[in-house]
Length: 162
Image 1 (cartoon, rainbow, N blue to C red):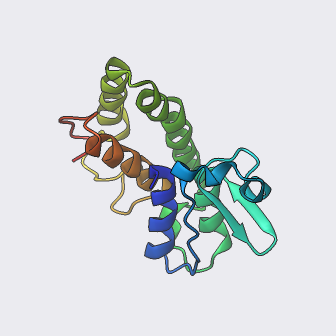
Image 2 (spheres, rainbow, N blue to C red; image 1 turned 180 degrees about the horizontal axis):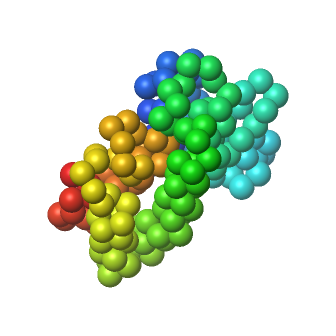
Image 3 (tube, helix red, strand yellow; image 1 turned 90 degrees about the vertical axis):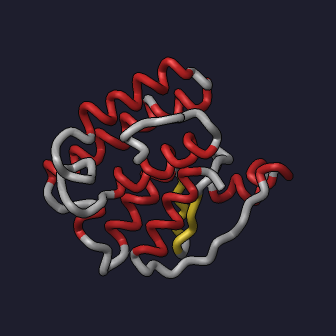
């Protein structure tokens, strides 16, 4: 399972959002079929269907789920626009840095990105990115990516992963 798909599933489970998981076998190129292209024209995972609404890109999905489903705790995607802006910064940084580092297997770039996480995003005494005791969708998205990088051996030691 891809880290972005994992983040969406974890978010749904943690927040009690009822969903039906449809497994798409990438090895069989099921994501390239015309049927899947109806859901996601980019033919990538994850993608969701909620009634007649179709959405792709994990960060867009996480934001949608946080806003569309009552009962999702505010810490995931706070109403406060300053906190939301910080979440957006992490999400955009994530796609510009960690995803590129993993795809290109650029170890030097990955080390630099991990250093940025440690020195900028995780500075202070708080366990989460926004300086609080509760995670946001930015924390969830980032941790799924970091766990994947650790599992495949791209990360040896980093306080960002711990």
